[in-house]
Length: 228
Ligand SMILES: [Zn+2]
Image (cartoon, rainbow, N blue to C red; front, side, top):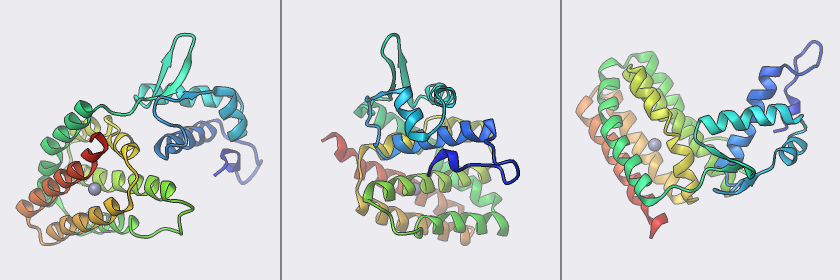
């Protein structure tokens, strides 16, 4: 998607906020899909040319991505993509998720309404469809975004915004999905999500806790191979 395609219907000129958001989104996607490798330098003028925008929104987007921990800025070197997770960071992140998300699933189950359940089922279904991907990388990148959305929806329903934000701030999905591209991972995850949604549907909070714990543990087991 070219950022410059984002135009208003009337005057046809670009709104500053949408340019900025669009550029942020495109660079995020490139980081996610490993079009920009972990640790690789990011050249502002190159990106500006590629996205057909001036350097200002690229600079803004990179500053924002730096605050989000996704790119680094070094004196005289400039910007680079955040390095790949270390094994320790990987284990810490999963440990954190296991502390937070099963309990989040339990609470979400208690507070679930017909409306939020429907939204969650939609988010789960979102991961299974979508147009034919151009390659496995973009398929995986899309899956990761949809997975992040699904997990965030559950934390939203659980209702504690401090906890939800603390989790979101880790940019877990970006870091994890940069580790490994493997289509089998997605199929297994979909089945685990389905068990989770079934627990919500049955209003079984203990089953929701267990299903989330199982999903995250198994996800860790699948991905830890990246450090072998
Ligand atoms: Zn998941």
